[in-house]
Image 1 (cartoon, rainbow, N blue to C red):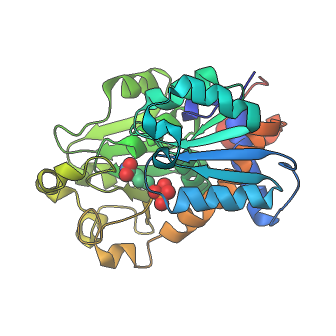
Image 2 (image 1 turned 180 degrees about the vertical axis):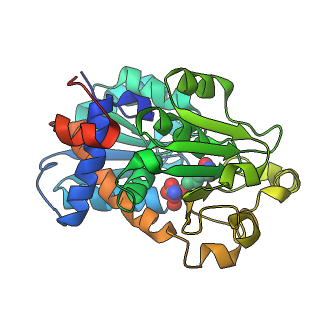
Length: 318
Ligand code: CP
Ligand code: NVA
């Protein structure tokens, strides 16, 4: 079976927990190894990136592998070569694909036609690698995830969807507030709720952050939505994460943002650059998590059922 990572739900629950524990171990022990020795990872990026691109590149290097970076503009993808053909060709050269693009359909098509793992490095629908490193950022501060309340304030976008999916598998409470018209996808939400995710929804940001230990936000307009910036600035006016809003959160709450951020829009500079902010730990953790995800995708992972059960509650071997 090829281990694709197109969304959180692609990793069996026990392995997902183990990937988190492994990322922490890779970080704590500053591990560099030869897990990817002789392996080539091709990264195809159709959107801009600082963190994801560089953390994957460094992760591959620290695991002894080799990376190749491609953009559609400089390859035949930009001249309409089918994804189906591209996936089959690149599978003959490399050991995994890391892909940032627009539609989730594109990563799905690549995965359906590749004989090597495809890892989603962000689509319009999900950003699973980011939410996994955010889980690590929370876990290293609050190992008992049962007692954690994470708030999401803002757009029902790819990050919101990823948090909703994370709440299926990790036992934290997720409280979310969106402006009307910017809710997350109904199917993603109802599936998560039916699978036991503990999620509360509201249109009021005060409701969402009440008592929260971690308050998360993201840009008003994601990549590809630049034309909607002005309209969104109006719609999201009441959804800024600022000191006043945080008065309703837990007194020790931490503020999270996947970055890049727009100070003065979704979050104030005082909050983002203040003592509650853990944004650069989140950014650092991208590296440690990419290493764990790559090891899992390419070599598989051995699950310590006891350790994972402690993290997630009872789990069974796959
Ligand atoms: N958070 C994140 O994915 O950042 P980049 O767009 O810089 O990769
Ligand atoms: N929601 C943002 C996340 C960037 C990392 C976007 O898609 O642009």
